[in-house]
Amino acid sequence: MLEKIFESTLWNSRLFTILAVVFSMLGAVILFLVASFDIWGVVVMIWNLVVNHAHPEHLHEDVVSAIIGAIDLFLIAIVLLIFSLGTYELFISKIDAAEQSDSPEVFKIHSLDQLKDKIAKVIVMVLVVSFFQRVLHTQYSGALEMLYFSGSILLLALALYFLHKGDGH
Image (cartoon, rainbow, N blue to C red; front, side, top):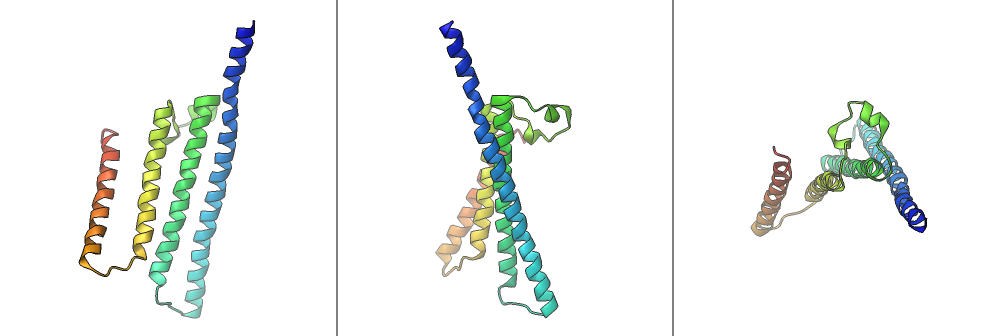
């Protein structure tokens, strides 16, 4: 009898993961909204520049940097969304709506390793986008710095290659 109560309590303790599901979904929604507002801010800025016939000195870099920053936030929101859906499916219950629809393969999670793999790939993409955003504002003063820059791009390309090679591509 005691064993049955203990095992039942132990099994039901998995339901605490609902906190991770709810709050990571809430975080994803917040990041989607913040990134959308950032993009809207770029649209308003460009509109004001067009109306005023102005062209600031670093307009291209500022626009690209703001949009890349928003993409970075969107990617992090996607990580949270994948984590939320995957955690729910692994620990709570299968999502009936996902099973009945032709949902993208990225949302179908069957193991914790598969969830970690999908999240890791999106995180690498976040790092690539963050790297690109930082590179936009970097000033190079010598050949050695350009060599480091080239080497870092090569390493990023290799990382992406090996990530996709693992998928059987």
